[in-house]
Amino acid sequence: MSNKKIAYFQNDAIDQEKVSNVYKTVFKPDDLLQITIASDDLEAVKPFNLPAVSFAASTNAVAGRAQQLSYLIDSKGEIDFPVFGKLKIGGLTREETIRLLKSKLAPDYVKDPTVNIRISNFKITVQGDVSKPGTFNIPNERVTILDAIGLAGDLNISGRRDNIMVIREEGDKKKQYRLDIRSNKIFTSPVFYLQQNDVVYVEHNYARIQSASSNSNTGLFISITGTLIAIVTLLTR
Image (cartoon, rainbow, N blue to C red):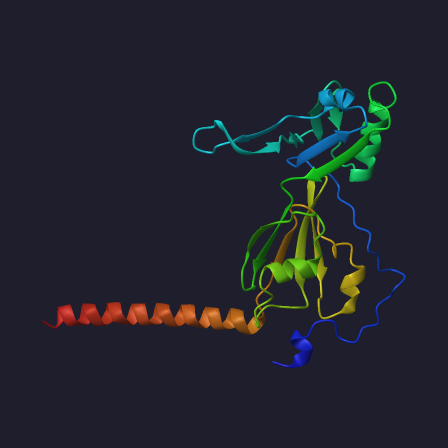
């Protein structure tokens, strides 16, 4: 196999004007959010912070290290927030959600509030022709396509570098993007930074597919031949 078919980042000039280190997280249904409201007035923020508890998986009793409860975004894109009730944040970015909460908190409830939001179930999945396919939890919510490939142990030699698929949920639809990681153009791709629940799929190359097909047909031929031999042996006894 030639080096041009497997080497990453081949010779393309990087368009620096299009490269951005800015990534944004858009909240979606089924996201689990940890939202913390802080202020100099500790009493004022108490009603707006969920308690921190920990439940043992086997007994459902409080145990172990306490962890703040999370808000689940429902199928309508809403969370049930203390005092304010239902808030629609599905489709909003982190910055937009922080502005929304601050506008409701200040100045009537909390003076100069600080709002921190974290997705506690941020994950991506890498499947196909990689060394270690699987689903990976991302603690800091910043993950690139290259990070994902690294987490999966890199592509196998038989994995296609020129047609990697990223499947992303956008609204109520799933959208597919294609990437060629042999090209520096990946740095300007809209899916260079992955979002929660993105699926990365690496196709097998043609030689791997043909080899698998050949091995399957060979196994079938041997099985059929063995069966015929056994039948002939029984008939000639």
